[in-house]
Length: 500
Ligand SMILES: Nc1ncnc2c1ncn2[C@@H]1O[C@H](COP(=O)(O)OP(=O)(O)OP(=O)(O)O)[C@@H](O)[C@H]1O
Ligand SMILES: [Mg+2]
Image (cartoon, rainbow, N blue to C red; front, side, top):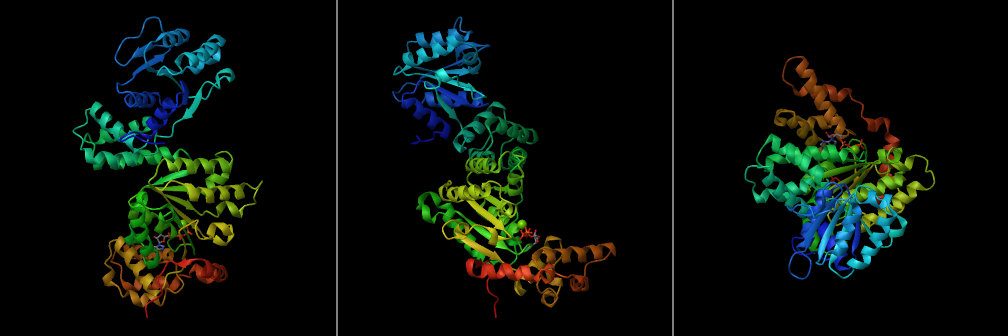
């Protein structure tokens, strides 16, 4: 595809179909309004200078041009085709829901094939739109079948500009259109309109304050897919304690990611795989990556994919990956990616899913950064871990002494307690082998105890609880050693070595 300046992806696709000379196109879509808009855009971009007229036909309105009354006696499908055949000038003819007529009448099917001949090389293009894929066999070869991906940023910026004007929104600042359009990416235009109305109902000016409404609407709509979840979390990298090696790596990758369009493909960051001991901050780090990269975060639920509730797992997985390409730039999180593997593999489905995933990782759009997390990485196929698939494989271990202090600080501060009030190094001795989640739990329990007694938390609250907690790592010693041994040779430690 060679896009013209300012041209949307959908318009490029349709323009190129027209330029290749195909007179009859069938677009399956529920978005008639959007297609009408794209056709108008294409009409202005056809070679030869003057814009081509766009005619629209429907069973209720007949054949008409924008803002004009219908041409006489064009209500019947057959007469619409006759009108096009007799038309002496170039034109784009948008036939809405024409599949009904094609289904019901052999005469219409015949007439459509004739039309192919009479439009060929005349600058006349017929576009049938319908929410269903119905193409009778005899016209199959004459019609080009298309499906449109959701609108891209160009289309969405345009939509936002028009819509806010149409809805009399208070003056819109052009500079906010782009980030708002990005927030709507992945939605159909109808869905985007719905989201926009909600935002404008709360606040008549389209601006940064509209963002939460758009994102909330998107969260609900994406959630309907059942396998992808939009996560509006906003954890910052400062809320992750320790893991300095990982953080430094992310800072570097972020820089490269921002330059992705000017880099050769092998150095554009593709993503990372994080494995580790449960409760040590894998999920937390993924959320922080999205904030650090200033991108939306989507989580693919592997349990849902394999549940069978969304059709065959393979199909659901492929569909989810495809859907995500429309939402780039974004961070895509495959949580517990080994999930599918632990169950018994029926019919090689898992093998095919991972084979697809690996190829997709190589070919996916540059705007997607993948963060995969796993607890039992040893279950993953070896080729998944091999260099080149992910940019790096990180191992998130139990936090070291300094990291534990940092994690205590983060969780105390988050709950409004001043960390300087506590002698945290003293706690290090009580918290050997603790996970970050256990440290958080200790802080929460200590604060709860203090609140119940109606007083401020003091250091001994933390110490008492610390002494009473038996960390999981003690009871799960063997599993943890197993994970560590395995990771030792195959992964980079996310934490910096302790300072001496
Ligand atoms: N390094 C850390 N810094 C700050 N908080 C942490 C850290 N590690 C864990 N926590 C706290 O523990 C909670 C649980 O951690 P998280 O969900 O990230 O663990 P995980 O590694 O994804 O575990 P799982 O394998 O069970 O999914 C976090 O929400 C956070 O509050
Ligand atoms: Mg997790």
